[in-house]
Each structure stands twice: as C-alpha cells, then as structure tokens.
Length: 152
Image (cartoon, rainbow, N blue to C red; front, side, top):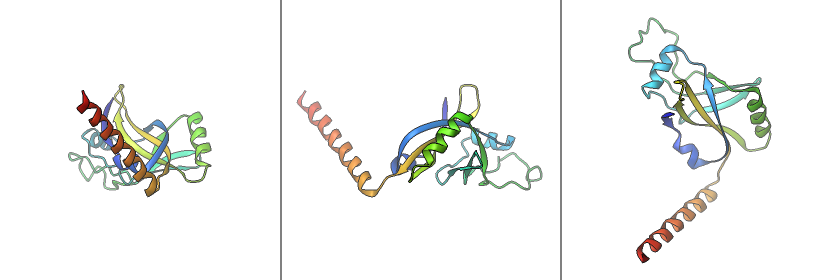
C-alpha cells in the first residue's frame, strides 16, 4: 500500500469513529495524474445521495501529457463516484442518521493490486475546546516521557 496524499487537517479537526476503504471511478488521465501525486483532497467532501457515495471537490488536474483536444470537457473538481459494498453503505447510512456525523476523505492510496483507493472516515467535527484539551494531554504525556528519560 503506497500512500499518495493524506488529509492531515481532517484528523486535526474531526473525531474519526470508523474508516472505510473505497474505490473510485476514474478516467485514464485521472489515474495517471493521481499516480504522479497530482491530487488534493483537503477541501473534498463525501456525500451519500440516492444510495451512492460521491466525492465532491477533489482536485485532480489534467495529466500533463494529455492533449486538451482529447478532454475538452474536463473539470478538475467535478464529482466522482465511489465504489463500496452494499453492506458497508448501509452501515454508513445508519451512522449518518445521527446528528453531527459526517463523511470525510482521509487518504488516497494505491492498493497492493495497483488500484487507486480512498479512505473515508465517519466522524464528528470537534469543537475548539476539545482540540485544546487533546493538545494539552499530548503535551503532558510528552513532558512525562522526557522526565522519565532524564531520570534514567
């Protein structure tokens, strides 16, 4: 599994409860662009509409060696369909019924079989107070580790 890009802000701003690995429906020039790490999922959003998952606002620029004549209609941020099993889709739909729960794209990677996959997370937006509390806990743990290390 080779990671192409991660959405670090999503881990910082959201509390992720469950993750799913899903496939994507892509054109040939999108696949080449993604494999060259020309993709941005920072502003992307995953939506569940009509029992299908869609990723919206994922930026995949046109592959450098693709002629604009071959893809005059291409838009880098159009919506792309995500491929997931029906069982997992039902689980996601039931999780989204709870208030405040959202789907967040977390990572784009290449699977062992060479397929481009997306990791999505089901989670909630953290409040500023919760983020500060987590940072304080990490800082305290780091300081305790330093103190223990200096005693040895």
